Image (tube, rainbow, N blue to C red; front, top):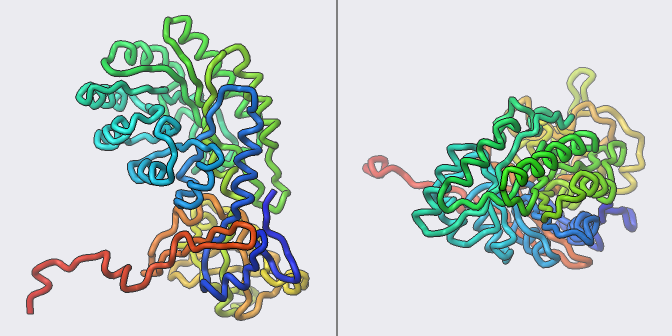
Length: 424
């Protein structure tokens, strides 16, 4: 469910008209709905009511501080993968004991920062990382609570670039190696191997891979306890998908997902951690853009808009589909024709929709790319020296620009000239 509907002939975010935002802010921009963010988190969280659990929002999906603060205020923990994300989580006001640190390449400096803030724990992905973390923790006289990320070798049946649970992927430690690595962890100083972690991928709409992976992790937990390890929590990652095709690819409800989790973990008597990202933020955001020109080339019709691959790279990077909606309801109701919606970047790969049936957009028309709240603004760049896209947060009839579009002067001032180039 999301809060983007037509009212009085214009697409709105909650009670705010997107054409008014476009006039006040100028396009392109991202727009997020507070009501959708809150609803999605609470629906997921409440699916596990009655269990000891912690839902940690994955910052890699959307790291805007206002988005994070919105979620922190209703009880979200945070899943981070870098020092920058850790600092963002702390700046948003989340308690350190509600932060987990993931990622395959944590540096000693990142480990030290996290240990200094006494975060909940680390998801450790290799023997080398385990030894490094032990060394940093010993040097600081701190104890690092960890869960080894175990790769269950399960096919998530999702796009190959966002699948993470097969043996050939870079993530985690092999399932068969886990018992030996837990024995090693128990022997290392300043390490508390209290958990088990897994995450098999993203945008998963079939519950079968989850069920397979959860069963393997539950079995491993039982085995580890039999070996004398005090496993007190299991982190089941994230990955639950969202509907990008206007409901045609409807994923399972969080309540149904929760039943799969509960069946697999029944009897373990441990804390459950989750790392949802896309399912919280995906449907909560849209990218609004305006048509600059239209043209035809042979039988192909092109609609050239002011947003580009540097603003929303998912179509180029993943061949991802985002539903496109005309901001004008009258335009949306016109007959649809086949066209490519492309940006101004000098790349053939710069497109937002290819061979798409959509209204015959005219110069000056506004359109919104739906389900753009996750992996949208966080992957934006200044390629072609284009300014970073601004972000707007709506709450009812109010809105705030929560990341302004920088000026060209600000973009240029971020760089420095080499001293020898300053000479006459």
